[in-house]
Length: 524
Image 1 (cartoon, rainbow, N blue to C red):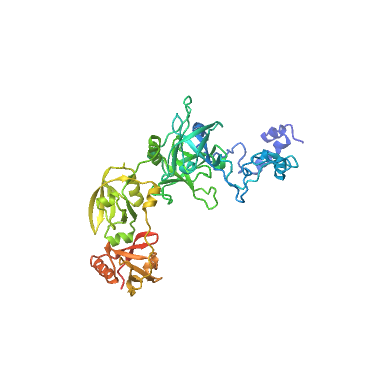
Image 2 (cartoon, rainbow, N blue to C red):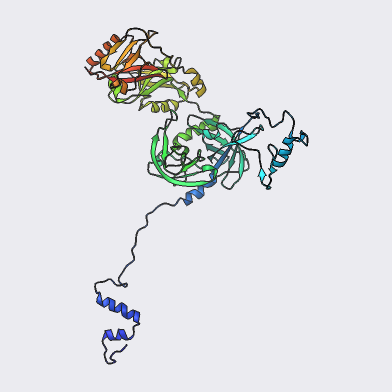
């Protein structure tokens, strides 16, 4: 490159000491003065969101979480074909050496033994998934659990251990320990196991308080999905107070952490390492995780677990009435200002509620002054009292508020309740003259037993059809007044209209039991 040595201009001086690459960069800069040069550019900076790490929580709580293996006692049984592996009381070794079965099993493995096939592969008797026939304990299920005390008490689900005869817990480090069942409660799906290791103190976790469980909070689920052992997933509390129809005390936390089969009984932790819920169910069309799991709240579990640890069972108060929700239509038919409380379909014979004077058609509005929102709320409130407790039950009866004193009984176990619950007898279609109730969209006839009226026809376009009334069902009362003819129904409805009501409350009996239905009465 040539230049004038007497030329002292800055550009010439720079060119003199520049490389070809530097010259190109300089020329580009001069040609495009508006372009930002590297010397003036700044790197893009983005503030990283403060997403929490769960590592500290997981490290702290993992030693307290266990896998629960359950074995059931399976009795010996003959093969369906009549062939018994005992060979009619003769042992395998007692068979003659030339017996074809002995030659077969000697080559391929006798029942319960391993043999070798033609290629040297291990062979076992075919298993079709049915029970083994050796009268031994057989693994039947796997779930999760967690220590709640240093002396070895473990919480899990009732459905994990329900049919078990022996229990083994597998700790985070692989240690296997035998456990015994202390108690279980099917109504809340909780159970307590105990590991007897007097010289050992176990890492354990605590339950969160009510104020520690909020919708939107992070949760960490630790458990044993698909039998894989300690697995950690994370999500948030999606909702609270879920009723999934599993029982009268449904009050589940819904979470979106990945929960699968085997996670049952496993804990959900908040970021403080406290248990906010115990996994018990998932909603899944496929059987796998779809982001909707349900956990028993810590606030519910604490009291139940305390009772199980103390006595092996849970004692609950019992009112003894069949109840249903109060809908807006039912509230209108009864003259209630709002649709709340629990409508008494029928008190059980001999129950504390019947003895105290609670009647069919009453609405329970409060217990000891605390408002009852719905049947589930009533069930939980009554169950929270110890048997023998005297409570003040507020009622709405015949358009007026009243109250009764009830000495609560002991809630029967599920078998006792099933034995004492009778279904309504099957009704045969009556032969008396049908009587039309055109304004209600149905025709009725007096019941054969003289108690109520049998529905013989329902207009498919009527409110009665919309409310689910069907042919063959029986109307036993209207607005809590017994009826035996269509004219009596009409009389009750006319009085309701005079009282300014727009609906009437019909009590319906069917093969599945009794229920109340509110029908509009302001037509025609």
